[in-house]
Length: 236
Image 1 (cartoon, rainbow, N blue to C red):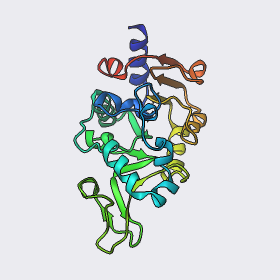
Image 2: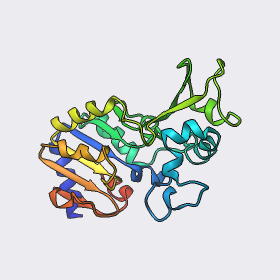
Image 3: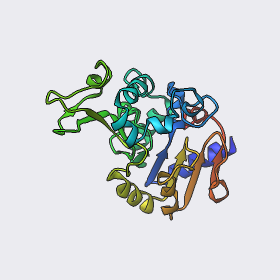
Image 4: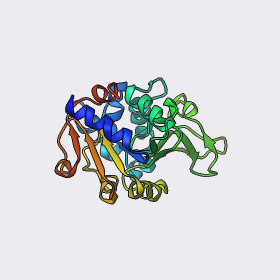
């Protein structure tokens, strides 16, 4: 409880908080992460998930890409959890300036948060690779086989695949982190680059790390919580 009380004090005294979240933020909504023992990378497929979710694989084996994508990336029926809802409250109360997320599930926006930087994109945005026409997630996930545009082009999710650069929100994320006084990093192992490099731009007062496993940045943090996120956020 001492650490929770200290976290409450930090939040109370801060008016420029940035939250940087990874897959662990959404696991309690029922979305599997990637690297845990039950994560996607430890499940058996015809190809490694890292290969399936690559730029090259998308264009050379599009049918299998979409077989995997529709099976594992569909979060349309998933609901936000207590962490997403508490972040919305912090934003509404003028404490939280920005959510930076590595997740593509759209749960932060579904919870009602306004300023969300989806640095790896979102399943909710999809574009034709030929004419660039927009398609929503329902169209993609309800399609048979490869989703096609009315022009005949293949539709591609607006998500950052392996071998692709991060989208233009990354520079914006750096700016928010540079200016914030409190950075809460949660549900990420901080091992996947370039996203993990964001923490290096923090120059503020309080660094809070929340993750089930230890990270290499724990020794630099004001507070470290190695436990379920919901246990922490339900106390706020």
